[in-house]
Structures are given as C-alpha cells and as structure tokens.
Amino acid sequence: MVRLYRERFEHYGHGTAAQAIVGLGGQAFMAKNSQDAIKQFRPYFDNAPVYGHGPSLEDFTAQTPLTVGSPQQVIDRTLGFRDYVGDYQRQLFLMDHAGLPLKTVLEQLDLLGEEVVPVLRKEFAINRPADVPDAPTHASLVAARDAAMPATASSDPLAIPSF
Amino acid sequence: MSTKRIAVVAAGLSQPSSTRLLADRLAEATTRSLAELGDQVEVEVIELRDLAHDITDNLLTGFAGPALQAAIDSVTSADGVIAVTPVFTASYSGLFKSFFDVIDKDSLAGTPVLIAATAGTARHSMVLDFAIRPLFAYLRAVVVPLGVFAASEDWGSGDATSTTLPDRVARAAAQLADLVSGHTTRRDDPFAAVVPFEEQLRRLSADD
Image 1 (cartoon, rainbow over the protein chains, first blue to last red):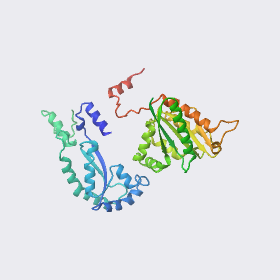
Image 2 (cartoon, rainbow over the protein chains, first blue to last red):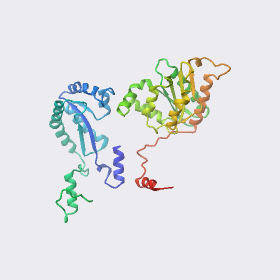
Image 3 (cartoon, each protein chain N blue to C red):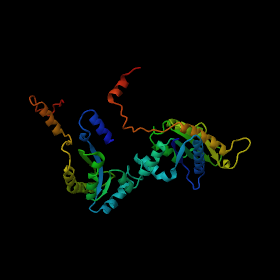
Image 4 (tube, rainbow over the protein chains, first blue to last red):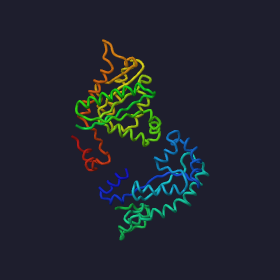
C-alpha cells in the first residue's frame, strides 16, 4: 500500500517516490525485562475488546507492529520498519490500548520518552538520504508560505497559504 | 499441453471424513478428464479443519495469518476449484461459509467451480442449489451445471431408478475439466493496474 502511494506520488509529479510523506503507527508495551513485559501485558491483551479471544499474543506480535518486550526490542523493531516502507517522517506509538490502568500507561510513557525515542531519533537520522524531506509541520508550512511571497508576507497567522 | 492447478476445499471435520472422500474422488476424476484433454494437473487439497482457528482469527482481526493466507492464495489463483461441505443445519457448514467470507469478494470471479456436499441422508440434497450455488454465483464463479451430493447410502452402488455416485462424480468432473481446460486464472495485482485519475473523471462525466 505504501509502495502504491509512493508510485502515485511520483506519477503526479510531487517528487520522487522516496520523497513521499509517510507516517506509521506502532504499538508498544515495555518492561526492563522482556519476559516481564509479556507476563504483564498478556492478561490485558487476552481480554481486550479488539485483541481478546483472537490470535495469541505471540501470533499477533509476529504479524502486526505490536511489540511487547524490552525497550531495546522496541527500538530494534521500529528501526526495521524502514525495510518495509522506506525512509519515513512520523512514527506514532499507541500506548494506552487494551484497558491498561493509568499508572501503567504513565510508566510506559516514561520508558518511551527516556529510553526509546532519543535512540530512535539518533538512529533514524544516520544514513538518512539528504533529499528525503522532514514531516510537514504548521511552522514549516507557514515558513514556506512566507518564503514564497516575501514582498507581501502577512504576519496574520490565520492567513491561508496559497501555493 | 499445459499444467492446470486445481484447488480442493474440503470442510469435513471427522477423521476419516466422507466429505474429504468425496473431494478426493472428484479430484481424481477431474485429473483423469483433464489428462484426456491433454492437460497436466496439480491438485492441492485444503482441509478447512486445519485452518479453523485461523479463519476465526481472520474474522476477528481482519487479516489472515501466514497459513491461511497461503491457502487463500492457492484457492484464488487456481484454474479450477472443487468445494465440498458437509450439510449442517440444512445448509453448508459454518466453517465452509467462514472461509469464503474471508476471501476477497472478487477473488473467484470467472473461476470454474465444482460444488459438492455430503450428509447422512438425501433429505437436504437441494442444499447444492438453494445454498451453495447462490454463494458462488455472488462470487461470480462459474459453477459447473452438475453438483454432486453424496448421502451415506450413496457410497454403495445405485439402483435402476437413480444414477450411481461414481457416475455423477465422473460427469461433474468432466464438466469441470471442460471449463478448466479452456481457462487460466490470472489475478492482476490490483495495485499495478491503476486507472489514471483523468480517466476516472472522464468516465464519470460520460453520459452515453
């Protein structure tokens, strides 16, 4: 599907296929020790509305982006997503699914923010081709609009950019 | 002289299974008929019992695991399909239906299909025409005119007033072979044949 999007992106002249803007979703549940992560997550997985009573946790993590294990395993698996879709711009992590209690979700966010995201940011940047764009943000789009019409650049943040 | 692939979908649950036995008989007869027409045949049998959990998981998650995906690919790319179900509750079995619920609805279009069913008695022999044939008609498969129903009593020999099971098996298989011999299934990659947007717009505005 991403390949089709990239091919049509290039077909319509928006850039090369490698330059298409792509974001991925991933789900993660972590503990320092990967066996603990699986042990803690399994009761929630087995009984959750979407996951429960279907494929086993093992089958589901093998066949989807869900990663249950140590932070290092989440890092390694996420870095591998580029092999499927090419260099991409956004990685979304779903952290509060399956009925996890608030305290657990906050702990997961701590692990994600302290141990996973800094490493991913560093590793994704290594060997990233220079012509692959960054994700478009509001700030970058406004800056691009202002750069495109320097003489009449308005400081009105609500002005609609015209390209 | 070409090689034709026949996929056999058998929904029997017991071991041994009369559903599987009928499926094997139909596959053998189809192979013989195709050989007479000059074709070589590869037969792959898919036992739905082995995929029962995977099929249910597919219903729950929306995607097929590797084993089920391989079976689906085998069936949808086959040049001909033999589909056999036991009669449960006066219709095809839930497992049989669930398998055809999880394949893509366009994936059997144009494929020659031979339908068959088994049961303890002949009471529900119309299941072929009231339930199974319409299912495959919706899928736009090409269902051979003769469906084969085998009640327990049919596994002996016939009598003066009815044709024997082996005779029906041979005739239905010959019909399937005739269709398969002139047909090769080609499933285009749906992502490869993209209709250009300008063409899609043009088709919308064309009135004639």
